[in-house]
Amino acid sequence: MNKEIIVSGMRPTGRLHLGNYHGALKNWVALQDKYKCFFFVADLHALTTAYDRTENIADNGLEMVIDWLTAGLEPEKCTMFIQSRVSEVSELTLLLGMFTPLGWLLRNPSYKEQLVEIFKKKYAGSKDLDGSLTEKMAELSEAELSELSSFGFLGYPVLMATDILIHKALYVPVGQDQVAHLEIARDIARKFKDIYNADIFVEPKPLLTNVPRVPGLDGRKMSKSYNNTIELGEDVEAVRKKIMTMFTDPNKKKATDAGNPEGCVVYAFHKIYNPDYETRNKECRAGALGCVACKKHLFELMEPELKKFNERRKIFAADKGAVEKILNPGAEKARASAKITLAEVKKAMRLI
Ligand code: ADP
Ligand code: TRP
Image (cartoon, rainbow, N blue to C red):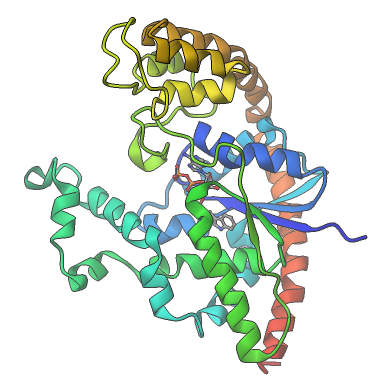
């Protein structure tokens, strides 16, 4: 029987963090044994926002693949590649874009969220905007907002849909924040079928881990854009310091105050790293444990795993040539799969 297909990607916009790891990458590693998997560096997606800062995209991609290998992805079990090296993806994106309604893209919730981030980057450091960027942004007219955006940026979900549909993936392992994008991919697949009366695509479903939204140090979603991350491969001592700054229940001022673990970042991490997190929950609620002790214990739990990752990472980072040797055949395999779908689509659209 043919194995079911999995596709997922990550943008090379900086170093990966524990949110990426526990929200997606850990799943990728588990899935490679059972499914036919395509995992890629979404460098075209990075371009949608960083079109004027392209100097680090290639290096970030390489570092990212080193993290993937360290986490346990194996080239014998899954196909790893760089998105832009599969030119069929760009071609199919153009074709799918022909019938994707603009309204779907404008209504996409992450479109406006991301616009805020672009806005902040553009005006970072500008004195009169500091501290109230989001409010200032809310005052912008639709026309001013659309000036910040580009054709490529608005089309982000079409490109993402293509990544998935081109390999006919059934499952897409991602974090919670990507689910809205996946919905658009499903809509595009359906619309194609309606218009061209051709049953080519598979409607993809998200696959979430048990921590689909890992919080950052400040309690918001952990994200490169929020500067609230613990990076994969980060120096262990630096991680210890970061843990000591983690957001906790503001009402628990003294160790003996009763606290509420829900919404506490330290507790969220206990849930990930501590098999007996229930005990921490009870102690916190009873005022039997202070936040400092709770943080110290969390670090003790995380330390061996982080050290092991860092040691293993050194081995992969020492041979970057070997990474290229994985990515080149990876792109060839992805192209072979992509070509088949592209030809089917062109036929259905009567281009060939
Ligand atoms: P970032 O927000 O840091 O730029 P990406 O958007 O590149 O991260 O995310 C790459 C993958 O990691 C996606 O599948 C995304 O859903 C997942 N992911 C990112 N941040 C988190 C998080 N805080 N919790 C769970 N999953 C996450
Ligand atoms: N949008 C995803 C992110 O920001 C990256 C991505 C691009 C992706 N294409 C994809 C994820 C296809 C899953 C499937 O993390």
